Length: 177
Image (spheres, helix red, strand yellow):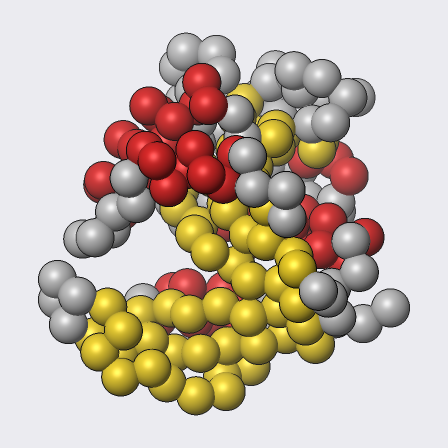
């Protein structure tokens, strides 16, 4: 059973987009637009979750205690404040992690790891056998997170990112049964 300080994941919905954009704009130099997130909400191959404190809105919410980690927060704040989000897709047996961010006030608490594990589990259920992603070369914390989750570096995309121009590290995970 979840308590009032438990972090759970809910399916992303259009009513989340305003809060998501606040986090997105604080996290990235080239942020996604509201339309990009709206497209992910309605993407039939998409997997998009928001992390929020408290009880799940419906039976589709992932509870933190479905993994070995229980994430708690020490701050007080408004109920249903979005703490982070993740967008991915699974198509033809291949998954792609598209966007992951955590509100600056909630970073370094294993929330990104929790969201990633939930998405990987959903991809596994949908029959994905390989998962790909791109990450900035300078984002060593994210590279470490993905490596700890089993991803391996497979290459680089030159000047993939702008503002500032930077290479992307290509990473891949082979899903196990």
